[in-house]
Image (cartoon, rainbow, N blue to C red; front, side, top):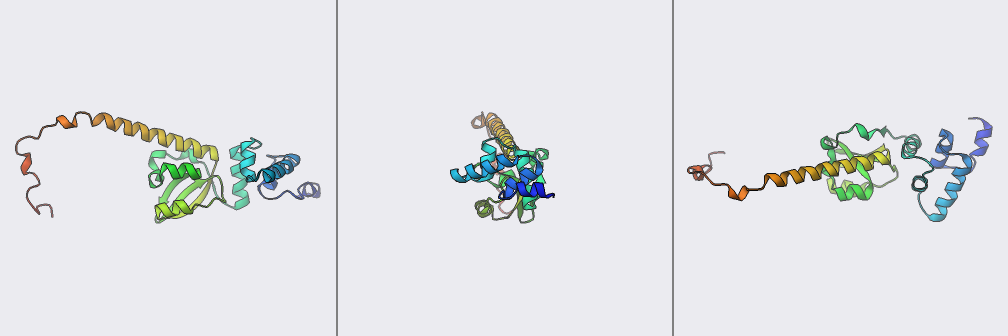
Length: 184
């Protein structure tokens, strides 16, 4: 790194510094963002995203480098095949996380905020939780798709239940299962 760039980065720390080094944010905007986020008492990453100074992909890439964590493209996951059923939708929305997969006693969770505590999810699942960085927009899109697909499945089940009360038991069916311990 040359000294001209180093001089410009004096006083710029953390994720803001990484974004300037990556060229996603200029030095003046980084200083301004740090000051305004501090005044508003809002995390810098959240402030940058809300003000649309950087996009979610740039923020996720910078976090991956800063925190030394893997960055995953969650768009390749099939929402019906992952670990979504292990965590309630309420918790997923509250923490803006995405259960990716379960391996043994570990649940791998996609998060856009590597500093976020995932203790509540650990408590509710009784699994060790391992965070993996995922673009915040991908988390939101995948959660929305999963919820929509579950609602359509539940809606489809309701149609199959119609007329269940009209079923008749055929003669001889009463004896089925009456053999006591026949299945043991």
